[in-house]
Image 1: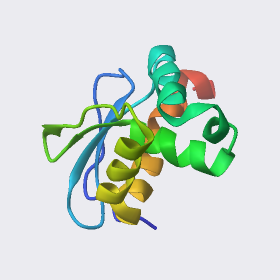
Image 2: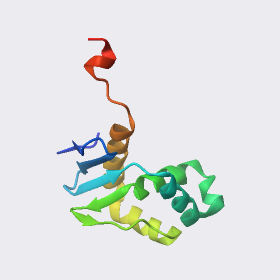
Image 3: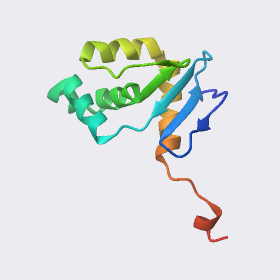
Image 4: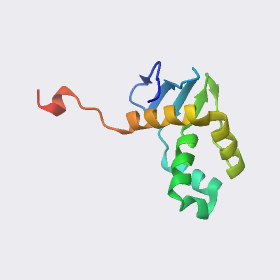
Length: 114
């Protein structure tokens, strides 16, 4: 399990900050329709049909910042692969957990009927 030192939701905007096992603070965001379109353009039709590759690409494409430094969205397959290499397993694991957290609706007392 990833040791997440801090995870903070930012005003319900689909953005979260998390720390990976190496201590890097990674800011992630949910992808918009335009982001997904650009992702498909960057990886091409063949890789877009490869579920494991697409899943990893979505996680990497979700990174907004690493240690407070903005990370531009990859525009090519090689840029995407360079970002995945930079993130490593530690970063990808932390991103996956953060994306799950911001994508899942939270259960409030009102939802629970209390």
